[in-house]
Image 1: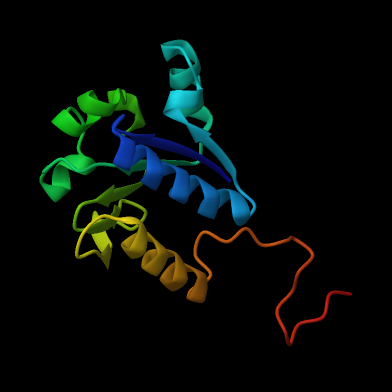
Image 2 (image 1 turned 90 degrees about the vertical axis):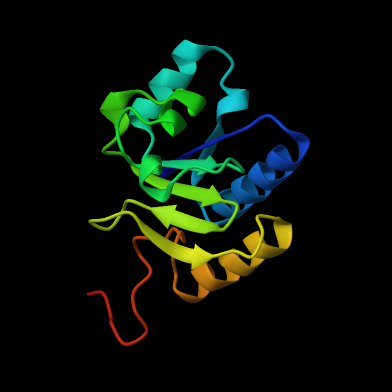
Length: 146
């Protein structure tokens, strides 16, 4: 899977984006960062070919605005309206939200958005085998490939 990480340019935001990137990378995924793509054309091209958009924000947006077309959050990170159907993970100051299920849901609660809380989210996700790239040849324990 290809993950595109998007966030503000502050020092704390960059540290947390690096932590997110390491988690996805260490679990076998391709990871791209808006800051490393250089120009706007490369960024827009990556937006169209990535599987997931991961947004990290400390701003106080209403939950629904993460996933509705034409909202301020889209303009803030430069997402185009045509990408509203992309699967997004939004790491906000109070939790993780996604549109991967029919209605935007909060899938994990944070007390504060920091490295400790991200680590807690990674442990939770690993226990549930979320965001883990599985080998196509790796079967289930009680299943044998013929």
